[in-house]
Amino acid sequence: MSLRESLEPIFNRLPAVASPEGHVHFKNKLMWTLGILVLYFALANIPLFGLSSDSIDLFEQYRAFFAGASGSLMLLGIGPIVTASIVLQLLVGADVIKLNMSDPADQAFFQGAQKFMVFVMIVLEALPQIVGGYIMPDVGVASALGVTPSVVTGIIFVQICIGGVLILFMDEIVSKWGIGSGVGLFIVAGVSQQIVTGLFNWGIDTTGLPIGILPKWIYIVQNVGLDYIATSEGVMFLLIRGGVLALITTIAIFLIVVFAESTRIEIPLAHSAVRGARGRFPVKLIYASVLPMILVRALQANLQMIGLLLSGRGINIFGEYSGSTPINGIMYYISPINSPYDWIPSLVRETFTGYGVAVPSMWQVGLHVFIDAVFLIGGGIIFALFWIETTGMGAKPTAQKVFNSGMQIPGFRRNVGSIEKVMLRYIPKVTIIGGAFIGALTLLASMLGTIGGAGGTGLLLTVSIVYRLYEDIASEQMMEMHPMVRSFFGRE
Image 1: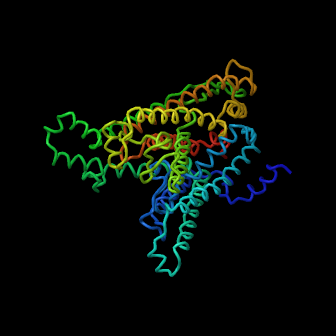
Image 2: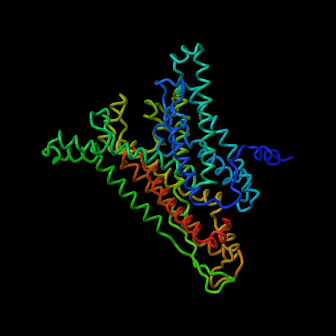
Image 3: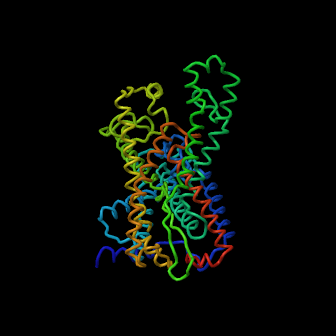
């Protein structure tokens, strides 16, 4: 018996959300989506019982696009789902696991393997944080319960695993019964919360300024003179600490992503049986969506977690850390750029002086930016290509879908091969261009900073997901009004 034959029964027995037997009405889909969103916010605000306030969040810098909440049941966020996807896409892309993603049986095996891998990753992402001493039990709670701290640690571990499983099934509910995907919905929820907080938070940061942009501006008007603002130092203060640059970047990225989402190549189609019935197949500039950017940042996050765990054990061959921030070694160079404080010399000097460590030289900062650019642009291309192949968006499966719908490309013979040749002219090239474009845009947004510290990746994901969610809602409404359209797309 082969390994695949041994694993398939296990994958088939994994718990799953039942698929709807018929068409789910738009109102019901909307209710399911909103219900899961409310549940997500509720779970993100339930603290882990027995967790010490001295615990360190290993993924603090990645919260924006991991859709997690520090110290809550949603501690892991979508991290296990994303990491499982990375592992499988790399294995399939390298032909370690040989699957034909246009074959429904292979697609089902891939989905089963991904779900199984998510369960594994929930344990593998929670356990090192527990064993490494980053997630610590509250001694007072252990004393009150009359148990040892190790028992409370076990309770915390179980809670984290339960939260990871819940977010997996919440994602599945949205995908089958709601609109869009749960992963996208949770990212939008987390990033939107950070942006709102970044605009209106009246709390005070370590520099004595309000955290939110609007309260910060009120403070500046009341306490900072115009003579200082008119100087070069004052302009820099207003741009960086005043949040003006972050606001401009956020608005600019929003407009650029909306423009990019609407930029497309349209391949003409005609129905082979119905004379005059024509259509177009759009190949968007961001054909693979911006979700591959999650995979790139998740890869960096997992590498950082390994470095941090080793550093905690006194093994500093890959670099040392201040809290969860790498300050030297390989881990410093492969860490993501998150704001102007990571590359503007005066701000880098200020940050590292605060850590009480040696300030990196200009060439080190430049190399850090270059490596992050390689990660984002190169990784964006690679994961975009993997993404379209594993999600059935490649030239071959797309050609098969067009053929099965009864459509053909005018001027070409009506067979799958002819349609695939035309798709091959556009889809791979547009995917590569789109992957590089979205990687470069993420780098730019990360370097300039965003409102609320959402990060370039988080902001791009949010804008793109919201735009596509708007398209999905419009599509669902159209199908609701025109049942013939729904039957044409096989949604009956």
